[in-house]
Each structure stands twice: as structure tokens, then as C-alpha cells.
Image 1 (cartoon, one colour):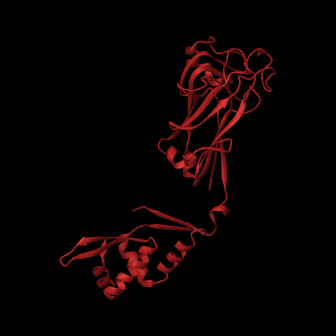
Image 2: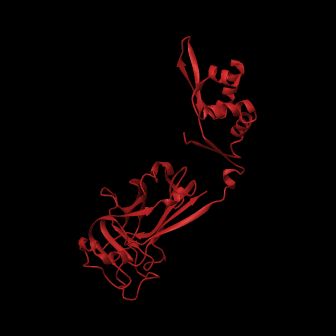
Image 3: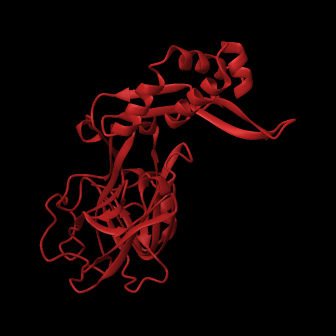
Length: 307
């Protein structure tokens, strides 16, 4: 079996049925029998030395509490009801779901730690100290120094990352949020250059934001002194939120896709891709900022909240 039943104080009717089911010594004896084997009602009656009608009535109480499962099988005379235990563990939390303490963890992913990419010029990578490889050359994305990246730009394509998902073993997940500082990518900077920037989680689209600009005209708060004023300077911090009732972008609902549909426990990691779709209405590229460039001192951050 290995099935666990979890209840809290919001499950009022279920708790009442569970309490009733466990308030009888006869029903507890029946559970002992049925955790080890399947039995029909006649067999239960004989083993416990109780009338068949009493056995049937008690089976019904246990079924209503979700503790037993039964099925009808063909017998010599008509049909017989065969029963077995439905769960092997019941957990009752004496709080409501709203009262459950919430824990939050943050996973910071350096922007240079991508595991896959597809890029077209204009493109490039810089660290806090200088450029990585040759500008507008996609091959520079294979350079070992890329792991130190603080700003990555691409005229088209995507970057893909893998986040650990060990938090799934710590409690019931309530929300996952992914945030990053991003903007469009034109040559140098361009305040009128929109781009449809999309985030995918485990291959499923989690929302598209149309960035209005490749931002410049003032220096990014964190940019090193050597970075030219004519180039992209800063982005906007965007937050994609996946909740039990749907998917959101900056707290605005973008789809009804809930947490479970992203299959976060499918692999030993969670795949996060950020980029611009080939058929985007505004295919304006992407700038992705690390904690040492732009206006926000953060990398790509995954925030998870769970009970």
C-alpha cells in the first residue's frame, strides 16, 4: 500500500467520519485484519464472530472514512464484497491550512551557469572585469570563463539552467517564484525596442513579458566603471510565480496552470529556460543581468515556499 492520508482542521466532515470509524474496537480489529489481507464480508464475520449484517455495517463506516476500499466479485451465489485497507498511515494536523507555518528557501543561480543555450548576434558575455571571448560570436558561450558572467546578451534564442529540487522532500510546496533582472537587446541601447521575453519551467511556458526597451541613458547602479555609457545599462526585475491555483507574472495571473502541472519532481532538477520565442511578436532579444551589473544585486533567484 504505502498510502498516506493527511487531514487538518479544515477537513471537518472527514475528521468526524474518521473519529467515528476509529471509535469501535470491532472496526479496529477489522483494520488489523485487512492491512494484512483481502477478506470478504462473510470471512470477516466468521473471523470476528459477529453477525454478517454487523460486519457489513462496520465495513460501510470504514469505507466512508476512507480507510477501506471494497469491490464486488462473482461468488457461487451472486456477488460478494471483498475488502482491503485503503491507507496505512493517517496524519491529523490540529491546525487549518491557513495556520500552517510557512518556510521559504532561496536558490541563487549565477547567470553564467547555464547548461544549454541557443543564441544569435548581437550576443556576448562580460564579467565584472571584462569581456569573455569575442563579441557577437556565439562560440564564446562555451568559454570556461562564462561561469563568472555578470551580463549576458543575445539577439535571439535562449539560456537554460538546472535548479536543484531537494526542497520537494521537505514539505508541501505552496509556491515557486523565479525572478531575474532583464531587458530587450538592441545594438548599444534603445529606449524604443520592445521584446517578448518568455520563461519556461520544465518545458512548460510560464508567461511572457513584453519589455519596452533596451534600457540606457543613465548608468546601472552596479555597473563597473569600465562599462561604456553607450551600452545597455539596467533592466527590470521580473517575477514569475507558480502557485497551486495558476501561474502569475508580477502577481498578475497569466494562466490557470497550477504547480502540479509543471511536474517539479519529474527529474532530479528543475529546468528553467529564459529567452525569446522564434515566433514572438516582438523578437527584440534579451539582456540578463547578474548580481554585479544593472540595478539589482541578484542573480536568477528561485524562491520556494512550503509547509
